[in-house]
Image (cartoon, rainbow, N blue to C red; front, side, top):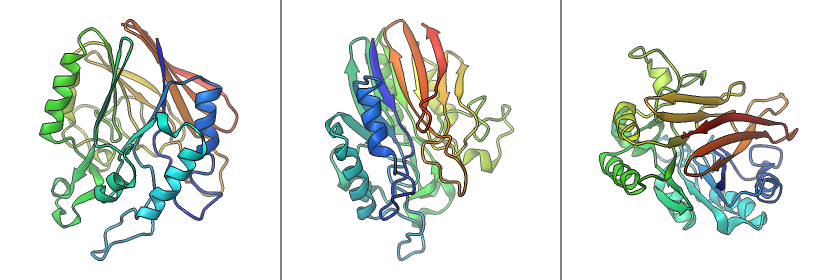
Length: 283
């Protein structure tokens, strides 16, 4: 049984000690020392480029934002056990990738009886009809080559349990108030939160057993849980970075206990320490 961490959307930016990221170091320490995780996977929006624009007028996250993010990570003392993939705010991807060798577009790690995969969902600008913005921050999309890689790695995992981290939702997940909708009634607003090629992604995932997908991105503060669709388990949780003004924080990080035959997922309110089990399933 492996215990692994799940912390999407820290949204760190420099010079804001009371803003997003203010709890990141202590929360990382808590996950490792209080909850005993082996690895921490941060699936997107390491930093937040709000208010920073390139010469073309497109929002981007500059290198100094990542400098602060990695400092907060390394101040925990557990930086060597952390891997990250990008989110919609981690653009241009060149800055994300140049920030540290722990910043990956895709990643694989194998624990005893568990295969962990991380996917990049930051779609190219042509997906939203804005090719001039390069890899833009508004849309999710998993390229065909990455889908092939995902298919190959899930196949290679055999009877292992499989955890696949996404930033944008890989499916219109029932239960998430921002990223769910009845079949074939999805709006453009809902597809902001979900990968544009979600059907192709789900076709790959649902071809295998024991697949659990922690997802990020949705900036919601009320709902968390799990949904089971065609044998795939999709997880959603409250946002980590509380970016609402003048409100008490209700945001969470999480950990998964997973082995060949069972998985539980538990979220922890990072202010009160209150725990909530959002998944308890036997394969």
